[in-house]
Image (cartoon, rainbow, N blue to C red):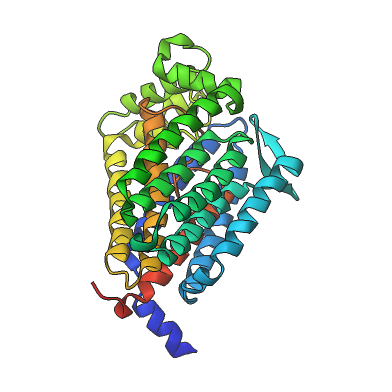
Length: 369
């Protein structure tokens, strides 16, 4: 047993783990800074984030010791559980900021959509691996479309536009990697346009439509829906080269910047640590993405490649959307910045996926280029 643990640790992707830990450290410092600005200081968010991180580290090492290939045998079951959770949360879930997407247990809120992101990756990895390009015909395309479509519709009913966008982007990315036939891509684009029209007419809540309209025209509601983005842009710009220092950012410390510890944590980092802090965040995310891409490159089978790529796409899309929100180039959709934003369930599921990635890395000597 001890020899097996030593063997796994010897193959551990320490660079991947280091990138994640360093990202968490930067986000944790920013969350602490925001917490100290309260009167009186409230360290509840700091304590919860620290506990989630400790549990996540333990989870990573446990998952790394387990062969990730067992997920393939439970791909469809995991997908069914994900659908069940989305249905249950609509009926019994807790509503926060207009979204019915949380389970509240003993004062702890868990957002099942974070698990659903991983479940979709596992399901698609199994399905695409079981149906390679030569056997991937219209029937297989429609089945995968129906499965992902059901998940997206249930998420939109919460409503949670950001998470739905991540699911769709993951699906599109994996289909592109699978090199499906061009006519399916055309069908997909047409279906996507139809979904957009139906969502706008019947699914999206008024405040979500207003967010999109404000993104197109920020001056439409500068003191309302456009306020968050304007304050975020001001915070990012005021950081200059080395920032104002932790605890000295005017936008975050004086509460001009709403949701500073969640959606707009990047703006807090940019203001208090400046361009130098932003470069560090970019560098650590770059390292994380490259290590995950390496896992795809050395995958020995299709399931491994799709699984690692799916995890990479989820992190990458969340990174692009959140940073874009903070810079005013993407509509505000409530997407957290992985490993940096406050949120126990989001952090734990992100670290869960990192554990699966480490399990893949720990077995890479068995892989071939």
